[in-house]
Image 1 (cartoon, helix red, strand yellow):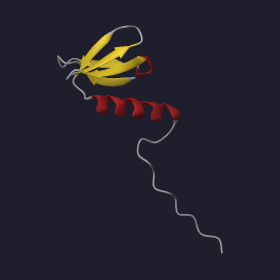
Image 2 (image 1 turned 30 degrees about the vertical axis):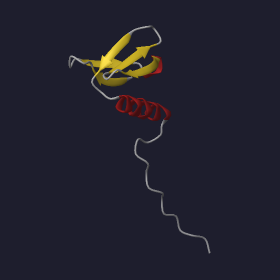
Image 3 (image 1 turned 180 degrees about the vertical axis):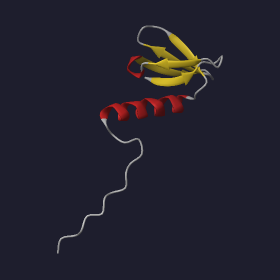
Image 4 (image 1 turned 90 degrees about the vertical axis):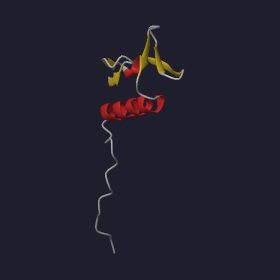
Length: 75
């Protein structure tokens, strides 16, 4: 699920797995697989990043890459 803001500033939580496509008209319009459309304040790039972050979170990947651990070198 991703948190967005409708064009009238009402919060909206969408199932990211049901997004079919995004349109920029100039507002961002999200078309769902159900046929519903939502106009949101976030840019298409912001929506895409929220979907990526959501999918990473459910797959157990960190949102911010951790620095590599320093292991002693074998000699």
